[in-house]
Length: 593
Image 1 (cartoon, rainbow, N blue to C red):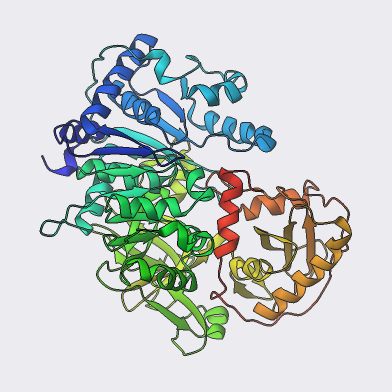
Image 2 (image 1 turned 180 degrees about the vertical axis):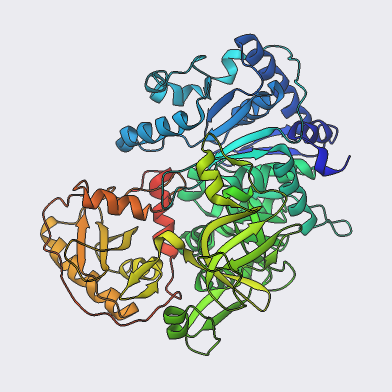
């Protein structure tokens, strides 16, 4: 059957006949548990029977709150067999921020109105009482509680909603993205077509990405299911504590494909020691996708240099672009040659929004060309096409674009325009390839010129006393001001004396001026763990601004802001995010020291 007419359950049934493929789960000690796709299907049938006996119906939404474990797959595929809709959510990871977690999870639950929450016993002991108060008709349960012998799978169409995944919510509260079976299968098929088996090489993967994230669930698991192939899963907290685990797994299982955001590569470069790589051979690794956040060329090169002695190929690292609303991937770099990065004139790009190559300038990584079936347009605010090299909003169209935002028709109409999805991202096309410059709603506008907040945040990341990955740069117009001003919010490192905050603020101002030419009108130094982030660990800049203006982000001891005037335009995307992003997500998923 053509992939266009298949459902995820069709993929699982088909894969269950391939006994040598399946899921391999590694625990914290790197001990494996193996489940063939036939095992996964049988366990899902058992969960399906229990869910039907519980009273779950076709079309019901079911929230899934799990770490990386086999019970997630019992629940995910069991819900699909019933004909209901799984909604993966992130698990609680820090007891110190449990109240914030429950508040955010409650908003997600309200957005999809699930009848049931499925989770593991440990998480239910932690948050079950609070979640049971969220008007859940069928309550909170674990798959082990409800499993019976067999269930009766419901018939589903490729056009039915397969799952709901939440957008990252970097600039706004996350929206519930509804994806059809047709869209998810089309995405998985397009990815597999991008890296066909060659000769006796059979692709297999390793992933440490969380299962509530589109890169982890769709890009790794569903893609392995569609092939069908084998996927080895590592708990995210294990990777963050010991990133060498990832590289050892690639070597041990001769994996050919693995995926990570930029910070994952940087974390390995910084933390992996030579003695942890004894016997490691990375020559099997053909495709190392890099996406989900800005791709920094310096980080990529550092990773290549660091692990080349262990067989890493120069063409392995592959920058990509995608988003939840497209199910996952939109563009891919070539997988048979090293990634491309070009330098563009700072002044022309910043002042006029036009890309001109030069020897000294902003270095930006190419994110390649559209995957099979996708189209990309760059438009002005009136949605008129811009010529190559001109910066504008990115519109995309393709077979795996979302059905819409669940329960929010107005937001869907705003995002889906004449068959095109307005991504909210900014970028330009150059020599037929996509270059990303930022999020439209996060762009800093200082004296009529646009700047990336990332370059400001990276500048302060090297300041002694600033907690890595914990800074936010936003621009806004205060009452009585002539124009937008730059606000910088940074967290101090744990254990930093409060009497040192004033000096930290001064050094942040100096670092920003030196790196970008901009002057921060206000610098606030905050307690560790203060700034808001998304479920995947990204900074929520606009939410941070709102909380600052509402007086909710209060420094432990008031720091005198630096009110400065005048700004020159300079940009530098070359500053590395390595340490910053590594610690940023480590703080979200695993308590850092």
